[in-house]
Structure formats: structure tokens, C-alpha cells
Length: 285
Image (tube, rainbow, N blue to C red; front, side, top):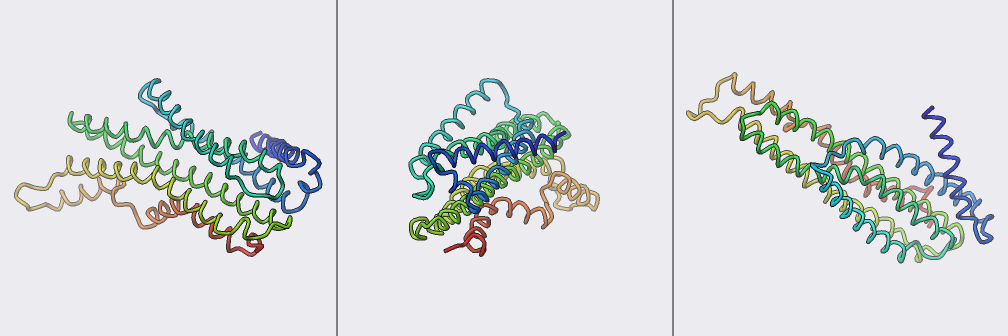
């Protein structure tokens, strides 16, 4: 059923894109292979955004309804500023009806990203609660929360990287379509895609890295509270083994593969923009 629903949604979104692009006598241009490829990928991205939203919305755990409302207002204000800036500085020239399609596409992406961003914001608050639990001598409760928060942060990073990367591929495909339409490369230079990639990478970094560093500080504090350094400076074998197992369980000593995966998640938008510029199929000038 979910597959059928996804396919039906894809067809519906694609037809909506085509209707929007073909408005005002531009049906032939909208059906051109390059614009059709762009609208198809954008439609697939919208279905992906819906899946990401449904998978991450359950992670949002505000302390109160008031905190959720305040965070939503702050997020919507930021999104409003971004949409306003993008509406005045959209891709130049080309098929003018693209400008009618882009704002809804931006809005859908920002809605899909909302649960991940809010979850990361709330992680800071939930980490403050762990200090109280640790002071009350409940390290078991803290360990459960530390492991849970790390998993949630990883899912949020994956979701944000996916949304950002698909958006940048959309930009690269749109540039390809514009150039095929006859636009001069200097009007929509490849550096625009790279700048988008760098900007989105910076945003993902600012959202994720502070929360991850704060989480790690709390994980280390848990280990130190359960296995403090011996007063006589003579650690026993049991102390060393127990401390190492707790660090591994809490995720403090992440293996190299997981560290590289997190780094790629942060850099994925920038890497995607580089591929969008360098791949022969997207370069086109």
C-alpha cells in the first residue's frame, strides 16, 4: 500500500509540476527533456521529503506545549526570511514559470526539515535535564538518555543532509535545463551551485555540530561520574575495563566508520554541489 501511495503521489506531484511549468503557453518548454528531468527529480524529492517528515516527526519531544509553540514560531520566522530572500533572487532568466514552482518546493523542503531542526534544538534542553539526573545519582537513567539522544541526532543529520543534497541536485539540473534553453553560462554560473552547497553545508553544520559537541560532553561526564579517576592514581584492571565498556556503550569512543559517516553527513551538501558542477551530465557549460 505504501508503494502504491508513493507512486500515486509521484504522478500527482509530477503532473502538478508540469502544469505549473507549462502555464502561460510554455507547455512545449516544460515537456523538453531537460526540464522534464528536473521536474521528475524534484517530484521524487517531494515524495522523499514526505517520507523524511513522517520518519522524524515522532522524534520531536518538547518539554511543554509552550516551548513547542515558541520553537515553531522561531523556525517559521527563519523560513519566512529564507523564502523572501530566495523569491527575490531565484534562478535568472530561463523559463519564467519556474519562479512559480520554486517557492512551493522550498516550502515543502522546509516543512520536511522542521522536525529534524526542532529535535536538535530540544536536544540542548534535554541535555540540561541530564545534569540534574546525574546529581541525583541516577547514572542508569542518564545512560539511556545519552544513547537515545545520539541515535536521534544521527537520524536528524541524515534527514537534513538528504533534504539539502536533493535540493542542490535540483539546482544543478535546473541550471542544465536553463543552459539547454539557450542561457549563457555566465548568467547562471557553476559557482552559484557551489555557493549554494557551501551555504547549506554551513547551515547544517551550525545546526548539528553544537548539539553533538554538547552531547559528547555529557557522555564524557557520565563516564567520569561512574568511573572517576582513582584517588591514589592507581587504576585497576576492572576499573579500566568497566570504563572502556561504558565509553563504548555511551558512544564516546565512536569507531572510525561512524565518525566518517557523520562527517560525510555534514559535508554531503557541498560534495553534492561539486558533483553537480563536475559531472558531465550536469555540467553543460
